[in-house]
Image (cartoon, rainbow, N blue to C red; front, side):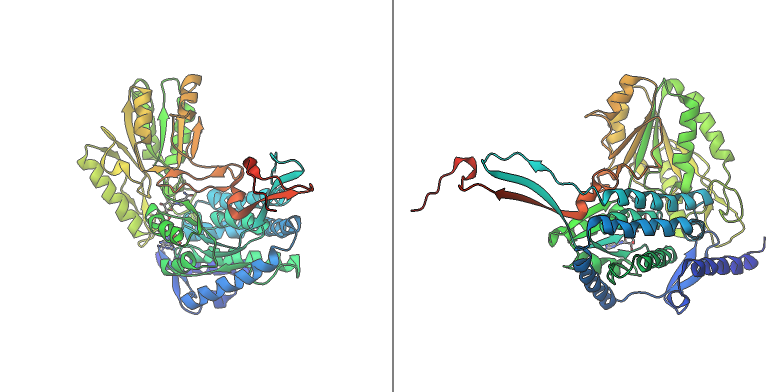
Length: 511
Ligand code: NAD
């Protein structure tokens, strides 16, 4: 297909989707930051950027909105999130497609990302009636002790390109039912989907009515300098930042310096272990999706695989075959399972890591550039690299589809190697042996925030708390009790007696 003909197609299609989603042309047609599509490598639009002064103003407005929103009862706040979920259901196809255009995801993953947004909205609606505090036994007679959870303030959200809309919704749905307002700095690589989310949210606000104050959601368009305004602003008590460990190393200390809270969701270097008893058919499918899906651009992508030597020669040739035959191509024009890398820098990073792997004795299958008919786009064959041992580039996250495969003989040693990297996000073991499975999940097993048995490292559900340890940052978002990070806890003691006993038997009697 002729590249110049397609150019017009993708630009026109993106603009049509933006219009259907309610984004006015003035937001993306009057000059500003380039919005690129990795599918064709073309510029789709130029998005108006936020100045530092504009960002500070937006934070002030969000703070005013917070002061009103916190007074709205939580179940009523849940109604706004319910309407957001309805709007997302109604616009799933358009938003999913825009995700595919802007982030390069295959259609089922673009739609899956919007489904994840719908799921977290449903979760948050239920949560809006369950922001429970404890009643605590007190040592003093005639007293009652309890916990109350209060809204926190303006929640800053910084998001990465690879989950351009879901990560915002994880944070926003919880923050809103908890009584907060949200200021969002999306990735500079995915500004159009952010504008679409803002338009969808504004429609939900309109349907909700006048109890929703202006300024509940503000979107800041810009690069890291605009993110830094959010990070440093004294009226932002919590920043939830998703991105690379490099970003977290900058953002974390800045937040700590002003005693603000941080939810850091950073890089992963996720591993799986395939034991002698594993169901190899199941493992093969899980490994293929975990390592090649989303073109290796998930924080939970499977990057390291330890295979027991008794099954290595059965599993690894089958895996290599899957790598050789997997379809790579445009997610908009073909049914390929692997779409493009986000940009040239990602491609260069992948080639550099493969070269380094070679110097450490790695045997590489795949990894070369694929001609998908778009000269400025970066498609690659996913790479499987058989490594003699875990060293060099294996120790770091390269945000591209590279799977390093290593042989092991002793499970304890494999678990030690599994844990011997900086990141601690996701992990899995493939085994039918109960002792091995429990060992992996136990106190001295996987050191990650996510540890799975007989499923891959990626594709988490919203119901669980999501996040990881060590250089992944320690933050938790989404399900379980992650909501507590978005509220402040007050411990209340009420004395309904006529005496004033002091705790710990202290006496302080004044005449
Ligand atoms: P990135 O770190 O380049 O950028 C992420 C966001 O941080 C962007 O919005 C960027 O503008 C902003 N940013 C960067 N430096 C900043 C600074 N000093 N102050 C304020 N904001 C700053 O990451 P990316 O390339 O967009 O995404 C890929 C990375 O994100 C990978 O490392 C991946 O593992 C990670 N990721 C982690 C999770 C998770 O939940 N743990 C989820 C998705 C992606």
